[in-house]
Length: 68
Image (tube, rainbow, N blue to C red):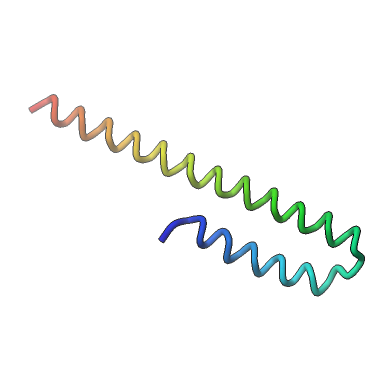
């Protein structure tokens, strides 16, 4: 499964809890904006980690291929 699925699931739980606990409209909007920012950041980190890991494995595979 894609890491974004897990991030979205976890953030959805946080958003539901936030919407139940923080009833003031201004504070609720700020809290939800923060959750949105967290989601964006977490997805960026996950994507970057996947890309760097893939690149490293590709480089190792290429080096092994060249050494044969």
